[in-house]
Length: 181
Image (cartoon, rainbow, N blue to C red; front, side, top):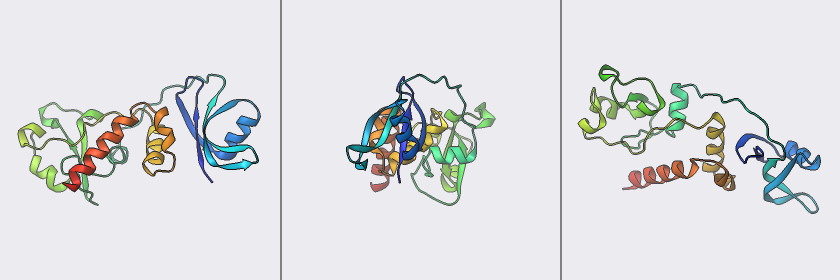
């Protein structure tokens, strides 16, 4: 039916769960409802979309691996130089490895083959090819899933509970304007 964003007692996103599990947590008094759907589970009880746990859960930090798939997902499967979508996207090192650029979230970007060849062994500034958005390390793997839900328009109310989501949306809007113009 729908997914529910679960927040820690500190309002930090913890995970995404089913509406059924969320209702159980609410009925047991383990969580409180912050946002709700227009649909009701039963009379007087709206379907939750965001809940907050009443007690803090300590969660160890888990770093997201730097993989091709995660980089493509972070960059929304678009070239960060020309904003095109293609089946043949590559991973470009912003500062080339031959010049000391390493493999890090901040130094890799999705690029189409044409832009990657055009840029070559130069920095974007030297090649006259500015990046449409600044590559950043994702906050968490949960961030990817939340971004997908918000971008699909299904759970836009989640936006206010996620740090950095405003920046990501502004970059997506800038990319859409660049594509249209």
